[in-house]
Length: 401
Image 1 (cartoon, helix red, strand yellow):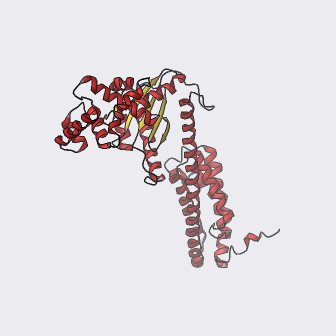
Image 2 (cartoon, helix red, strand yellow):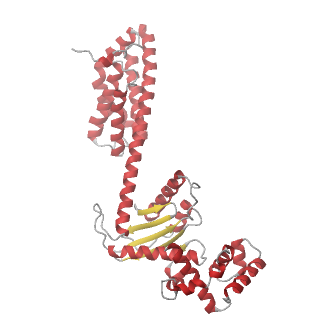
Image 3 (cartoon, one colour):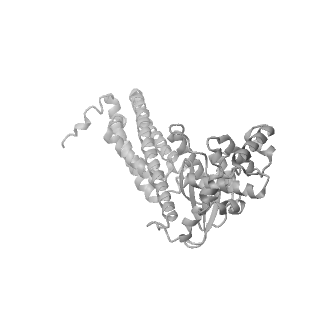
């Protein structure tokens, strides 16, 4: 029999007595692996629910391979060709959905059982050899568990990313009025949401890690609120969510989204009666949020009925440019535009406007007076107030269009 060149150096760190003790234990490997798979691991919560073929074939085979590698002197499983086997099995367990804690405990219990066999097999005069093998066993377990954990987490991350991309792809197809090849026909009512988190931050101000955390929190909040995997197409500033088979937002949706994305989160919902109505519903929800923001409405859940006039007058028409031009005198005066927007959003309550802007009410009065002087609009007149609202809405539409 040709000697495997990889065997050289495997036993160099162990005494002849330790090698002999390990060799006497090797014939017990098959029986021990079967006992582990059928009895020892059964004490682990969740193990009994695994498929029989996974327990009796996959896990038993991995335990058998690990024990043979160790007893034949593989240097604590440190060789790459030895670790690769365990890494592949870990990736397979991740794909099957086996919890990581359960997988790692099988390795811990396996090492303990192997130690028990070594201890029972050792003669009184082999205590030094037994101590050598104990140290080698602890080192082997540490290295294998490290490699297994890394491989499992890498595979799990890849699976999560793949699943998220599938959901994004399905959402994108529905929002574009197309059908995703892996998606069943969407028939019946569908709820379409547009969420706005915060204004996009300047380049470099928000790290990719912070954005990913925000998206994970938002996606989790949406899934929990609806009790299903929602189809979301989100980025750091917000985005669209499609919920087939649903025609009403759950009561705590806004609270859940605010907990995930912050108190400035805005949300609007629109119903689509069929798949072909989804793109139009998405546009409506987006416009409702945009109009609410442009008119100074406080952050929250916005409904079309809440901004019905503003939504209507912000639609493009021959008069749009002339209406927008009413506020041209305020260009370069962002504090005046903000005051006007907030004042109208607070139903022209000067004290409420002052609280939102953190100003003295007299300062609000001074700004409103200056706005009226520059624009010629009388904010005490219902007609001029409507024109100011229309101008803010049209300018916002131009800015985002």
